[in-house]
Image (cartoon, rainbow, N blue to C red):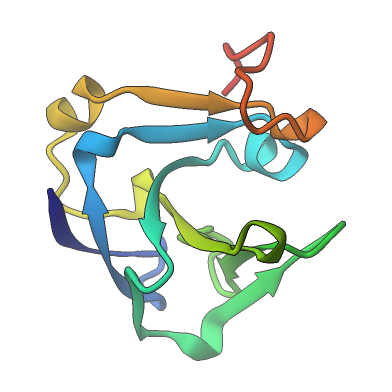
Length: 134
């Protein structure tokens, strides 16, 4: 069931709201940027995240094929969410940083599945061989 949550970066410059279904579980990826940022995320629909404040502090970082836009705060460096656009699959979605969402019931979050993906090798349908560092 979708519920609207609010969240933000560490310094509070960026504020957003997101419609999230906790029951869908969370995600961890081993690609170079997700692993280095230790991104733990909820997947949200393409229109499920709304920026409430801080557009001037939001910086987009994208690399390789530029399908993922990793947004971060220019002031504090925190990555509140990323937007993924996969034209070949006709699919768009957000990955919302679990740790940037406020007022979460962490017991409820810990009770849902964690999905692991092998983004490092572009094998998005597979669990990486090693997940302990994620």
